[in-house]
Amino acid sequence: MSIMLFCEVFDPHVWLDAFKKAAPSVAIEFWPNVKHKGEVELIAVWGKPTFDFGQFSHLKCISSLGAGVDHILANDTIPSDIPITRVVDPGMWQQMSEYVVFAVIEHRRRFFGYLQGQQNKSWIKQSEIDLEDYTIGIMGLGSLGQDAARCLKALGYNVIGWSRTKKDLPGVHSFVGDDEFSEFLSRSNVLICFLPLTDDTRFIMDKALFSKLPKGAYVINVARGQMLVDEDLIEAIDQGHLSGAFLDVFQREPLEPEHPFWTHPKIHMTPHMSSNPVVENAVAQVLENYDRVKKSKLLLHEVKRNQGY
Ligand code: NDP
Image (cartoon, rainbow, N blue to C red; front, side, top):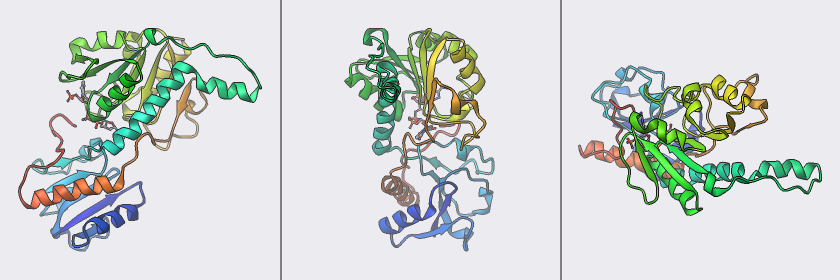
């Protein structure tokens, strides 16, 4: 019996070495060089799997090696009774919270303006935004969103959040569902997207959503590029309704060289690096689930396939 590793965009040997170190006795096979497909009980996935899951007759579990599962659920060959799990890791929350705290502080205190100032030997203070006029709206108050909310609250920011179900986070007003979405948006001077990509959230950040944000609002997207309508964002910035954006994820990655985001003066971007997997932690969770599969125990961090996350 074995685990199969599918790794599209990350050095597969990093994963393989970590699996071998953590569980030397477990048989690991690599897609596409799988000798015994009938032995594969768990498939660990990094990247978008395009193969037919039906060829693994003894498959019992599919594990995302990251926090998202949209790339796995996009494959329509997965039998409906196979559970899918994801990684929920404080090591990833910490990186993500650092990233959004940096983006928020940069926006409020204008640090990039000082970089330019230094080049011009200019000793001029930038105009900062008052904390009282500045509410951070976190769209998606799950594991990553909640950690970011805690970090921003600790720095004295006013933080609100929006999710499908009510949350009880000290000092963070929790808005719920479609009925409260407009009010949440109308109060968000900075909108940070931490939603999973599902049928409900695809292209959620469009012209209509931007028009509900206060004038001068700032958008940070660290979730998935397919939730953002790129042209609508550029239009809202160019018309002066939004003050800019900080983006880590894009509809197509790597972003094509001719894309206008690269050169837009009010858009800052990074190459999908806001939170990288902590390989040892991810492997430990997959191995724990492999053990649970064998013992028919409840799995860790199983996604609700009907909800898409
Ligand atoms: P969680 O599943 O823990 O949280 C998702 C949150 O979104 C929940 O609060 C959920 O509400 C809310 N939500 C989902 N659908 C809706 C909806 N239709 N309306 C309102 N709220 C909704 O996910 P994580 O926080 O762990 O991760 C979020 C996403 O971040 C991942 O799916 C992944 O795509 C992305 N990511 C990006 C990384 C990067 O490097 N850029 C790294 C890691 C993750 P409720 O709680 O009520 O269910």
